Image (cartoon, rainbow, N blue to C red; front, side):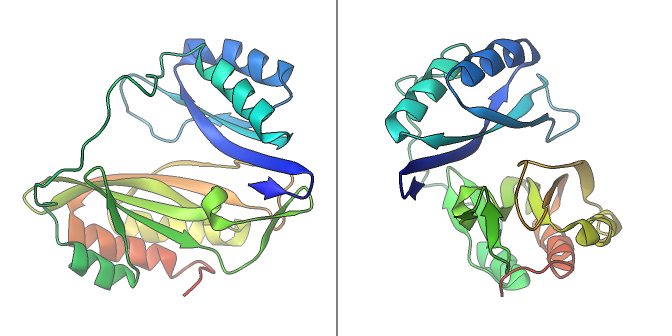
Length: 219
């Protein structure tokens, strides 16, 4: 994101355990801060770790630093293959899910995705952080056949919302797989709750809606 004197970069790198040390060293040598290292899921194979990053300064230099760090990983390059839009039916009822959640989604690579911003303004290092920079609740539906879907993503929460959301998810058969921070100095303080389930898509949408109703999300 452009700032008055350069840019701010935020995001996360998906790494295998042996890649964490070399990537961390290279990013810090190049002035990119590490703000969190943790899991998002529980039983994935191979096991992957998420390294959250933040940087301020010249956009091109920061891009170069991140490119160097990715070069130390097995992350496929941009020329390793391009995804083509699928003409196959999604396999789940997108409109029904949107109606339940009360929000419009978008299909990306066969995945139905939703981004739900918080109502508050989020500040990090004195700067306003827009929802697209990783502070919106992310919900993803991947069709798995027979009207079912695997869901994953994360809820962006205030501390007081964490347990009510956790309870709503678990009451609806949705597994909570992680609860942690992604940033260091944001205001208000935020926590990120990751989830997983594979069940009837409409049923899961109702569970996600029950959890969203426990948050101060934009209507």
